[in-house]
Amino acid sequence: LNEQIIKKIKELKIQKNAVILAHNYQIAEVQDIADITGDSLGLSKQAAETSADVIVFCGVKFMAETAKILSPAKTVLLPEPNAGCPMADMITAQQLREFKAHHPGAIVVCYVNTTAEVKAESDYCCTSSNAVEVVRRLPEDKNIIFVPDKNLGQHVAQQTGRDLILWPGYCSTHTFITAEDVDAARNEHPDAELIAHPECTPEVRAKVDQLLSTGGMLKYAKKSHSKEFVVVTEKGIIHTLRKENPDKNFYAVSPRAICPNMKKINLEKILWALQRDQYRIELPTEIMKKAKTALDRMLEVLP
Ligand code: 13P
Ligand code: SF4
Image (cartoon, rainbow, N blue to C red; front, side, top):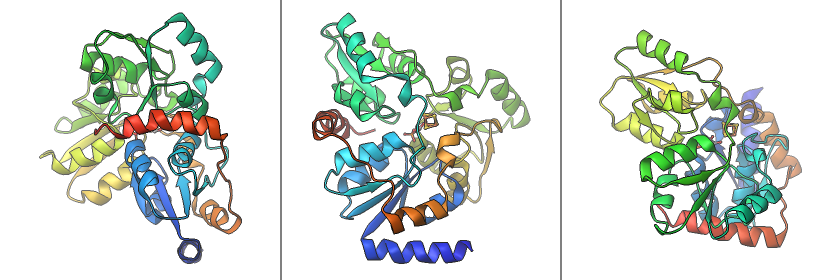
């Protein structure tokens, strides 16, 4: 059955001049059928550059919205309309406006894990792979508001020495990973390198060897001399890590490190998306224009 679905997806993709983008946390079959897999920054760049007419975005809603903002003339489809990001929903545009009013003159940096409306209220956007670089370039004499991820924000503050004004948001999936999980994995795999995402809690971040975006992990695993890695982020990325490094071993830090929203898309939903043009991302023009300014500033900064 899967073979038939894959065949139909491939035919429709050509017919519609569509491209399939998938985040590194998607299920294995979805990553395998995608034309491009990547982290949030990599996928944003691809969305901005592709010559396809249709982008099928296999990820969560803020990612598909980002693709639409960067390519407003294209049809952007999210195969599962309820694939959201709880962290992105932890701050609304109205809450950000009120926060800004309490800190007049501050520059606002938003993580890409935000709604389009929140991006429209921000000066700069960033992802986990360029957040440190984005903040490093900001003028020394300005206060900086960083929303919504307090964990990534703390990491950026540590790396840059800047005193960031943080919003108390967090990723529920990464907070499932505990310091005890990390200790147990270290004991079980004493020769492994521990690679973690900066969305992890400070207790976890303090115990690992490398803090990287998902794209950064894929690059790092290839170039590192280590033969074993404990993966301290959402488990989905292990599929691609294994595929790209057949001679190395990868272990999940915890069986609970699963983002339920990232698992909502499957091959059937991709096929329906292409057959029925669903679910189209549409955003108000004014919001897209403002959000694009913050995203364009981010895309100028390399990871
Ligand atoms: P990156 O893939 O950009 O590291 O982001 C991780 C994430 O949580 C996406 O929701
Ligand atoms: Fe959001 Fe966390 Fe899931 Fe990423 S892993 S989509 S930040 S809930």
